[in-house]
Length: 246
Image: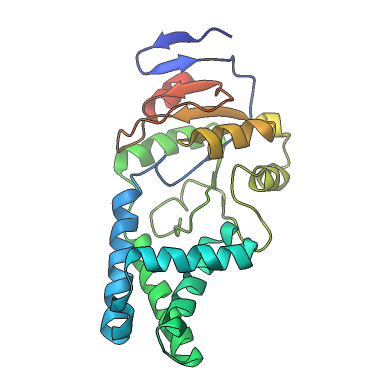
């Protein structure tokens, strides 16, 4: 299908059909996630270094190697970012010579610190304004692979619910959360329009689940991403274009 450049900043690949709800990816779709994660990681390890000095002996590569090894042994950790971080911190502290009790306490402290800074921001006003406008016509929900606290960043007032992976629910691009969202909304997959920044996790995942898609590219950090094997219905450069479209 030939793409149609309908207006500046928007490309239409397929015609949208009527839909009843809109789901949004959160990280890197509604806000720039990279600096938030960088700070959260830095603060959590700063805490660990103060309370568990041996933790400073490991580099970021060492911790990542530990995490990957754990995910090889426990594949379910791949789909639960909080559980994976806790397991990584605990196992690392044990390997560094701390007791299991000390390591459990340290891992929980590190995770709590990470969670605090990971959600220590609010959605910018223009994005919230766009979501509030869309909310007047459609039910809005969140579908994210991350572990941000939606209520702390201001999304609880505009979204009916936010789905996260874990506890047997797989990350996107698996269809688990798309299917669950449709079930909770009592709609068909084709009646859900999913908006996200990631060509594979969001666009391919949603289309394989039978949903319609909007590729928001680039998001706030203006990062370029190449399209995946399945094209979205619509590609836009900023959220306000979605408001104008529908």
